[in-house]
Amino acid sequence: MQTPVAVIAAASPAQPLGWLETCWHYLVLGVVQGLTEFLPISSTAHLKVVPVLLGWGDPGVAVTAVIQLGSILAVITYFRQDLRQVWAGVVAGVRQRRWQEPEARLGLAIALGTVPIVLAGLAIKLLVADFDQSPLRSLSSIAVVSIVMALLLALAEQLGSRRRLLQQVQVRDGLLVGLAQALAVIPGVSRSGSTLTASLLDGWNRANAARFSFLLGIPAITLAGLVELKEAFSQPVAGGVLPLLVGIVSATVVSWLAIAWLLRFLQNHSTWWFVGYRLFFGFGLLLWLGRGQTG
Image (cartoon, rainbow, N blue to C red; front, side, top):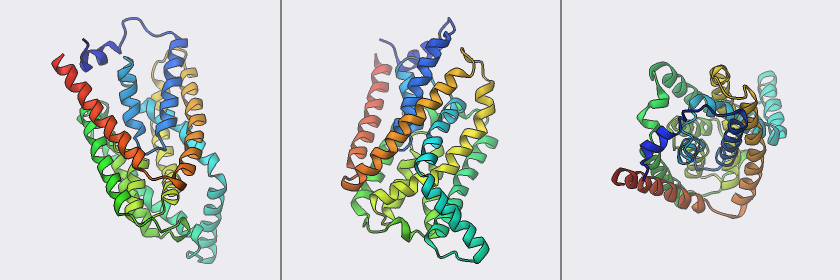
């Protein structure tokens, strides 16, 4: 029986992959990214775990960040009308000092909420020499974090009043939810999961909490992808740029579908399904790791 360590080692094949097989790998990574970026189950965790379980190995921070550009393209096009209104509100606020309008307040909240994750990302980039090999990216760490975040989401589902709407957003909401978003630099936390949890604890309606999470994530995901863009495209990949483009396109399509589905789902359903899945994912991964160590 192969241990998890053996599976990871096997993911670096003696023979280099052909371009067709590489495109297939990136297609799967794009689908995984699209399915998990906006659901509160952690795209980073799944992009680490799924390839390892398939014997492909960890694709690394740079590649996963670039594939996330597909998700940001999807969310920008999906919420293009919302973004136009937010921009118009911010412009009106600057020109006419009308910062009490909902769109202006939402723009300020998004800007303020982006600061914590930018600072956290810079700290990791500057202070952690090899984050790809960090203990925080280990499978056991991802499993434990997934379980902890599941319990926090359950607490938020139980305690949240679910009365506030997006039109009631205040600038301080951006800071509160932005601090929660900064936790997503830890694999397994889930950016959408942490922001949804914080919003529910703050009394937000489920669907509106998800909408704010999506809008707040646009600057963060975009910056993460752009920072790693040069490094990812500079890495030797069979087929050149084509596999990365395949991953980005598949992530775009699947992300769009996931956004549309989640917004409809949360209008009439709770987040308990995601709590259950995250507990299953975390404990299942721990069992798999334990079985490998004793096998």
